[in-house]
Length: 272
Image 1 (cartoon, one colour):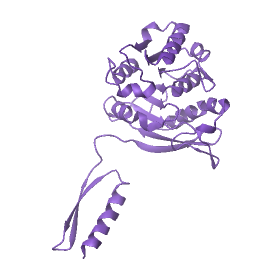
Image 2 (tube, one colour):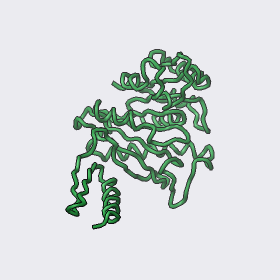
Image 3 (tube, rainbow, N blue to C red):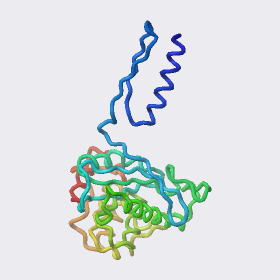
Image 4 (cartoon, one colour):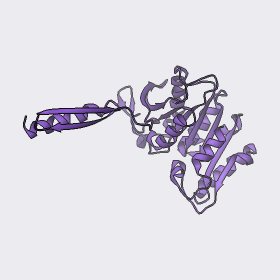
């Protein structure tokens, strides 16, 4: 076998392996014309499972589902994660993996309509850049579909669902929760009073379960809106405005080393 042929075989094997969540080490023995392969199982970092489901209005929503490492029972906590405008579900990867593998959560992060892989509605492409305020308000249907998906998962508990949303995802989270009293709690990262037509002023008074809010002082508009929302429900014990000269917004706060306590730790303390 020539070196060219060996290289070709090696390339093909790597491509096949990349879709199996396993790692293969290939050893080529040119003298014996043989290739040995060693397989190692999936890494300890849970990358989750890609899932897909439809909304009531025909949008194909793509998400990543992380099953809890510790198994499930009637008290298994379950989370839906909603990203910022112009981002996608991958901004939650580190937090989602930590919650599922170390804290025993069932976690579903989704691409909101018009974002990431969720850009098809009845075979029509729907980029968020073309959305009207009505279109943005329909994002609550994405959350409804996400909850319905979780209801059918044996690893998740539909009675213990909380929602964490960032920026526009925070507004979507609160608006959906206001219509669904079974949502256990919501965590709002850099919410706004009105973002792309998604208003939160009425929604925050309709939702009666725990609400937690985080923003940074340097992100002045979000900080102001966060405090205004908090004042509507007297949530003084459940709000954190970081004042360490940070202007991080939404999920950007998760990687901001200046925040104390780190946002991930704060979220975990709120959810417990």
